[in-house]
Each structure stands twice: as structure tokens, then as C-alpha cells.
Length: 211
Ligand code: AP5
Image (cartoon, rainbow, N blue to C red):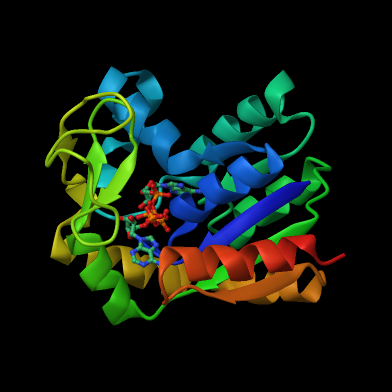
């Protein structure tokens, strides 16, 4: 299965991608995680992307397309994958179509902006392995420490309230038009993501089990 998870920043794409991965054994491709790692490693792409990501802007389409082409050509994607956070513009979606990657389903996770702002203020991520936590909804066993690798939990730079506002503006202007794009292709399903994580997962897995 080839799946796209659409949704605003903080809608729960990363959280639900892990649930789908556990249930279907699909590779998760998160452009956000790939870019953050490149920024940390100070690669050429990371240096190019750093200011965009830190200021809540989209990284240019040509950079994203290069990442995606490279990633999708790897062996671990040949049996299916979950695209988390990509495409994010109509140009990226068209480029993906042009690669002849036949997407089976696009799931749009819908959450209101004010809920997102509250959620993102409580997110903490592992500075080493990128695992994601929440101060109220996904609390690590030991405060400030990653359950998975023991790394220190930090606040993502783009989770500052002003940057979250900008990310939401960018989402509504540049990414939300993808809802209609995939609706027209007849592969879009909508899942309401405002309730608890487990409730959203249940709805999402039901959609994936539908033919
Ligand atoms: P990216 O890392 O993809 O960030 P995002 O899309 O803004 O999404 P988030 O990671 O913030 O949220 P999410 O929907 O995954 O939610 P999560 O599950 O973590 O991209 C970052 C940046 O990279 C972009 O701004 C851009 O600069 C660049 N970029 C990436 N891809 C790009 C592209 N294709 N084109 C151009 N630029 C690109 O959940 C959030 C929090 O809420 C967590 O703490 C979680 O525990 C909690 N939570 C989740 N679900 C629930 C729930 N149901 N109830 C309560 N809490 C919940």
C-alpha cells in the first residue's frame, strides 16, 4: 500500500504514521525528519533548508523533490510506504504523479487550528532519535528523557507559538488545496483527529481496511 497522510502541522500525521507502520509494516517517509536530520548534520541540503524550517516556511519544491526521488528509489520502499508531510504543494503532488508512483489512498486528518496550537505547545521531541512526546498526552516514563534511546527531550524550534501561527498560514494557503486535488482523483478519505490518539487511530485503520 502507498499512502499519503495529509493534515495541518500538529494534526497527528507522525503519530498516526507509526500506528499504520505497526499494523501494515510500511516504511514511513517523513520529509520533516529527513530535513531536520540534514540541518543537524549540516549537509548542503540542511544548510539550504535551515532558515525555511526554523521560520515555518516551506522548503523549496526542487529540494523536496530531490529528497523524495532519492528516498522512493530505495529497496525498503518497494513494498509500500507512508508519506508523512509530503506532498505539501500542488507542484509537489504533480511531480509525484509524474514519477508514476501510484498512490492508493490519501488520508486527511482534520483538526481545528486552536486545538493544534494547544497541542504543539506541549510537544517534546528527542534531540537524538526524533521520537515525539507530549507533556499531557504522551508522557515519557522519565521526564525529559526519551523512552526509546535515552536522549534528551527538547522543544522543536518551529513549535514556538509565533512560528506555529506561520506554519498554519502556510498550510491553509499552500497545502490545503491538495484536499481538492486528491478528492478529484477519488482517493481521498477524511478522518477527524481531535479526539484521543487511540480514537483517531481506530478511525484511520477502519478507512485503511476499506477497499
Ligand atoms: P514536519 O516535520 O512534517 O512538520 P508538520 O507537518 O508541521 O507536522 P508536525 O510534525 O508538526 O505534526 P504532525 O502532524 O506530524 O503531528 P504529531 O503526530 O507530531 O515539517 C516541518 C517543516 O519541514 C515544515 O514546516 C517545512 O519547513 C519543512 N517541510 C517538511 N516537509 C516539507 C515539504 N513536503 N515541502 C516543503 N517543506 C517541507 O503530533 C503533534 C503533537 O500532538 C505530538 O506531541 C503528539 O504526541 C500530539 N498528538 C498527536 N495526536 C494527538 C491527539 N489525537 N490528541 C492529543 N495529542 C496528540
